[in-house]
Length: 389
Figure (cartoon, rainbow, N blue to C red):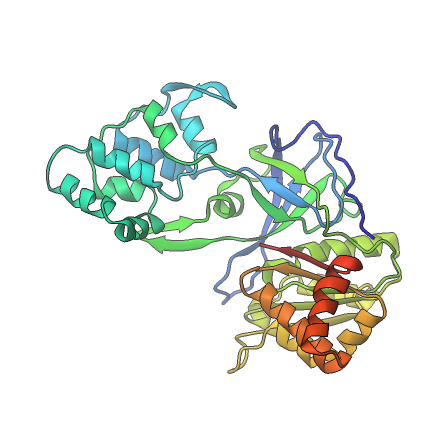
């Protein structure tokens, strides 16, 4: 059985995002953490937007003013140069570069244009050698943005009209919603990992995570958002059904929402959360809230895995195996199994742990375990649900 997402009747969509305001931006990591994880509260009042837990929030990013200004300076372009944009209508070059174009990673098209417009000389010859070799060209664009290229190869003359066609459009990013709309009317909460790195002598941020975590001003309607309902990632159809949730790091986001909704609904089903991160002392996201959920009986069980707190790294899939007998009993008693987070490694490791538990504690052959987890649980009964990225 599946639950269809509720249709959103708001006028604000991916084609017409709502200019929302961030009202809270709190770092969740404690002193000593190498991570920058943020809890954001975004105000939706006046939008008509609502959502069910399990949905995602689409956010259109903005380029940092410092990057836009330096790009304009390097190319000696007037920021107020008039342009006509398909979405904005009559506008300026600065506005288009800020809100419509992705400047965080240079395109090959941009690099080729710089080469073509450089005066003859050593620099042009050097860049031509990079462009001519696929491997070198791939490596070159991998960790550079437009400013990096123009700093290395100054002197190219590029017009405003040309510039806005050389980079990719700024596409929206989807973030798992970390709140229940019933518990927080008019708001949407996000659990955001800010991407931060340094290349070629410059500190940089992920395009959207940097905008949300450090670029957007509080209480200013400059965050374009829309709601993306989920067709498959939702609460069980009955509040009596048990839930097992595996959400390390920011993967905890939808499960915070699930717990808030179960509490609001007065659901009687047991809830079991596996959470993991690097260090308990600095990376235990929402520790106080989870402790409160435990005390109120909303969260029945909590197993944590802090990978760097001991010599041997321990992850959520290791805790699953340790609790394999109970986990198998929960599944046999109708529990829904949820996973949220990294698709490349964590989700695969959790999936393998499920298979191992079915073999060890369910007495199934490897073939039968695979059929039970991947067909019966995931497809037939739709009790194995994933929100991975």
